[in-house]
Length: 73
Image 1: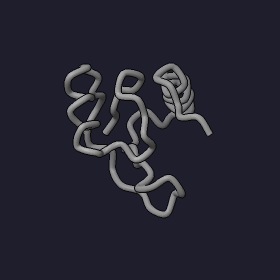
Image 2: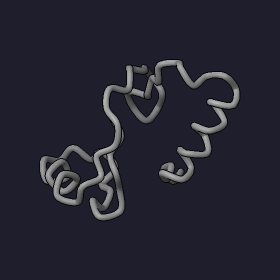
Image 3: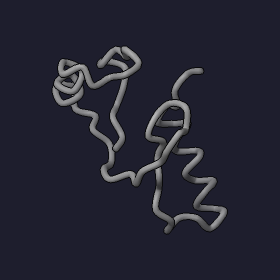
Image 4: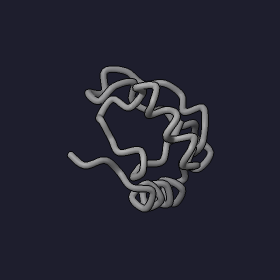
């Protein structure tokens, strides 16, 4: 399964706003199997150097290329 792009996420957000869910708190999965959920605390981290730093610390679970991702949460 491919991950969501920012454009995919935008479409999903617009749909939820149109359904009346715009003021609800967002919970995100705690793992890739949906075994738990926690509150989304932060917005996007997209700066090249910032993303690279997180990558260097081994914080990417799916071995993503830091040049092709932004971070959410």
